[in-house]
Each structure stands twice: as C-alpha cells, then as structure tokens.
Image (cartoon, rainbow, N blue to C red; front, side, top):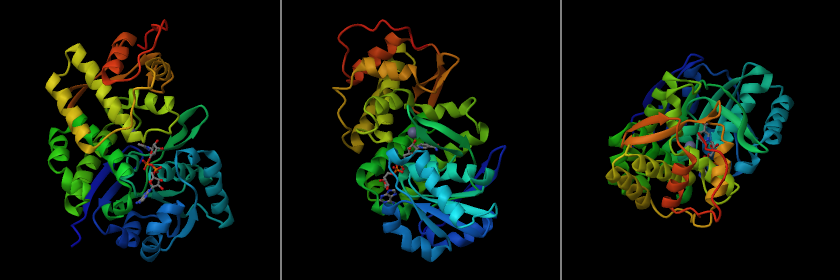
Length: 373
Ligand SMILES: NC(=O)c1ccc[n+]([C@@H]2O[C@H](COP(=O)([O-])OP(=O)(O)OC[C@H]3O[C@@H](n4cnc5c(N)ncnc54)[C@H](O)[C@@H]3O)[C@@H](O)[C@H]2O)c1
Ligand SMILES: [Zn+2]
C-alpha cells in the first residue's frame, strides 16, 4: 500500500516550493510537475545506470525528452555540463522549458547547474534517486561542479520549482551507497534532533530493509531539518553552517584520498567522530555522547580503513578548505546529541590530537605550519 505523501514547504528569499515525499510518487510525476508550475516542455537528465533501472517507470509517468550523461564524481565537471547544453540546444529548448534531474547528487548538482546557467536559467525540478540526494543534495539550492583543484568550486544557489522524493527507487541502491546516505541522517540527528538520532539505531533493521513507511518518515524528518535551516539561511551566512558538521575533516579525508576510497558520507562519518573527539577534549561534549555517536556509526557497518591516511596531509587539506572565512576556520562543535556550537578558535594542535585519537596516521615530524584558526 502506498503511504500518504508528505509535503514540506521550503521558503527561501529566492523561491518558495514544496518537497513531495511518498512511496510511489514517481508514478504521479506529471501531476506534481503541473502543480508546481514547471513549464510543459520538459527534459530529464539522468545517468545510464539510473535510467536502466528506473527510466521506463519515469517515461511512463512523465513526458520528457531524456538526456543521458555519465555520473560519478569524476564526471561532475564542466565538460559534462556542456553535453547537457549541447542536447538542450539541439532540441531548441527555450526559456519555457523545464529540466528535471533524475539521479544521485552528482546528476542533481551538475544538471542543476546546467539549468541555472542555460539561457540564464530555466525551470529546475529534482527527482533524487540516492538516499544522500533525497535527504541532502536535492534540498537547499546548491548546484555546481568540481574544477581542478577542488570540489564544488564552480556553482550557484538555484532553487528548484519542486522536489519529488520517492523512496521506492532506493530499492536498487547498493548497500554501501545507502549507508553513505544514512551517515548524513546521523548528522541531522547530531545537529538538530535527538529523536531522529535514536530512531536510526532503534529502527535500523526496517531502515535497511527499506521499509517504505519507516524509510519515508526518516527521510521526511531529515528533509524538514534541512528545509528549516535553508529557510533561515539560504546562502550559508550563519545557521546553515551547522550542516557542515563533520565536513571539515570529512572533506579533507576525501581530498587526501583523491575521492576514491570513501563515499562522501563515509568521510563525513569519520569527520563527525573527529569533531566529537575534539569537543570532548575541550569539555564541550560529554564522553557518553561521543560514545553514542561512535556506537551508532559502528552499528551501521564497517567504514574503509584510515590507519594509513597521514594527519599532516589532512591538516594541509583543511587549510585549503572553502569554509575558511577571512582566514578563520568555522568549526561545528557538537555540544550534545542534537546541539552544536560554531567556534573559530580550533588550534592545529587540538585538531591533530583528535585525528590521532580517531586513528589517522601520525606524522613523523611535528608540523611547523601555522595554526588553522
Ligand atoms: N548540493 C548539495 O547541497 C549537496 C549536498 C551533499 C552532497 N552533494 C553532492 O552530491 C554528490 C554525491 O551524491 P551521491 O552520493 O548521490 O552520489 P552519486 O550521484 O555519484 O550516486 C552514487 C551512485 O549511485 C548510482 N545510483 C543513483 N541512484 C541509484 C538507484 N536508485 N539505484 C542504483 N544506483 C543508483 C549512481 O549511478 C552512482 O553510481 C557529491 O558530488 C556531493 O558533492 C551536494
Ligand atoms: Zn555532506
């Protein structure tokens, strides 16, 4: 039995729109697109894999011209965006066109950027197909691509007309990708909701079995948290920074291992452990809360090993992170399950110690570089 759809409103200064979430909603796509006011000439950008699994169902539900481009982090770059432009131009897409993204975060970000920039912007709709995209990347309006030497260096804030989330497409998602998305759900629990945090552990069997009801409500809660933060701070001037919890060390871990060893969520899982370790050392977080986080992460399954990832390289990567504002690192410190504080006085010594405690590889010679703060 399909569950009742949930509707979550997002109200940003640049656009108001609705996230619709429910098992089987993909089959009602045309009605949802029409309700959102998305222009009738529609294009769908997807990847070969997602289209193979779910393209038929999509095509039966909505009339849209398909543009298939490769996904995966190494294709999240301007040449792939260019392929989308080429297809739009060949089809004479005009400003009264809608671009629907149908895939994971990579397709959403890169095709979203194509929509933001083609003819100075055409209507955008996200239909996310990974757990990470459903709870995170499809909400909030960040679109963009990677550019040597860094991730997400080219991009825009561009809100969609609507977001349609159908958890039933997650049935084909590999378990590792599924878990990678769950770490971002843990992040929401840690920053904003002790209840959500508890639920992940308590209901993990049903979550992993992708029970439609349980999964829908966990995704809905995550979307509500992200939507509320984005409502308050569309362009990440303040509150939205809490969503970077675990991402300072997380991004460094991804960069140092060249985006090959870890899924983004896995690196964030380690990043959260590092932040918690640092918070405990400062007396800002109780040791039992840090332990609860470590236990929950461990409960979901093994993470890739880190004992050969050098702390010196992680520190170097953090110095280049985009989250530096005027030379200061804004660091999200957990203060309890469901609460954080943003600080900008984290020293290199504290960070090094926290990384060592979590199990990263100690550098041979002490670093002589200046403090990160
Ligand atoms: N815009 C934002 O606010 C934001 C937030 C978080 C992450 N991101 C970005 O999201 C990207 C990561 O997204 P992701 O984790 O979804 O990775 P992804 O898009 O690479 O998808 C992961 C893999 O799953 C496959 N896949 C997608 N849907 C599937 C399905 N239903 N069944 C089977 N396979 C499926 C894809 O083909 C791909 O191989 C990163 O580039 C990151 O920077 C953006
Ligand atoms: Zn993330």
